[in-house]
Image 1 (cartoon, rainbow, N blue to C red):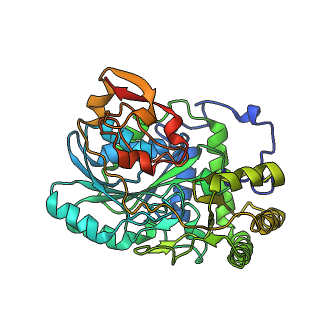
Image 2 (tube, rainbow, N blue to C red):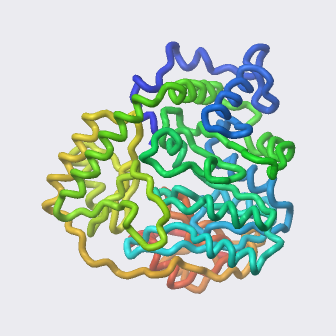
Length: 431
């Protein structure tokens, strides 16, 4: 990230950005109550993404996720949510004093979370019929897509809303090589980070709604409470430029997908690397091929080698994988340079047996997130924290998905699931 890849052919300003760093003036509109040019761009986004209404966000998907949850579930209400959710979703749970019911994805031996099962959603409703909404992350950081259409059907049968964190899927709609978008699969509220996979500046995002289940008035109120009252017009301008690109993006996406598929085929032909695809693990509904997730015996070492020896920065790495994020802004030269580097590295990095990690950690909640935040705490080494109660999110970043939440018991399963060197870090625990 960002999805514009610093490529001026897809995102640039004709003038010094300082000259367009304005505030709410006559003619520039007001994002808190848009009626002019900002409203026109929101209507433009709704046409492009086929939503009933779209909202521009200048503080990333974070604000949209928090507003979506708070407007859908009242205080002390019940939310069914995937456990591998971004920490912003847990912020909403804390702010709304919401009761979360977790859906746990299957986990691969490479410690990569899979899809959420529609059957698990149904079971959650059977035990919690009072739940007002379901919150799912799809695609995941690694590109794994859940069966949103089936989950939407189950959710709506229980008179609840489906909110999808599609921060990593703003590009899905623009080529049939990608999975179907959540908005086209029955979701009620969808949040997308334009800056992750499309040519738009960091922090720029959209929130879409479809259907009549969402309380639009309350959603707008929470957006105004969460978002800055002085949003950056530089970021808002980049959203406008991104929308302009999307109105005429067919050729760009055709070229991008052609190069992407050729690169994936070439990586598959290497001897020692394994490229994740739709056949990676059981229960995977669909896969976003824009993510190049490569399995290896030491992802962190490979990541360092690519950066130091080839001037290639990966999006992230783990104990057993690297992730290269691509977008329509990537050049042929960039793809070729990545493939050349991987071809050389293929001689040194083998895909070997892993330490099996068959279950996603399920730490026990001793108290709510909100209760834990207000408790006295002390800072200790995580390696010494087993049996203590977390006072903060234990969330490797990226992707910012908590493995252990405030108020939960730090167990040996939690420590074993974290990256190899993560236990050397300091964390806050409740006294």
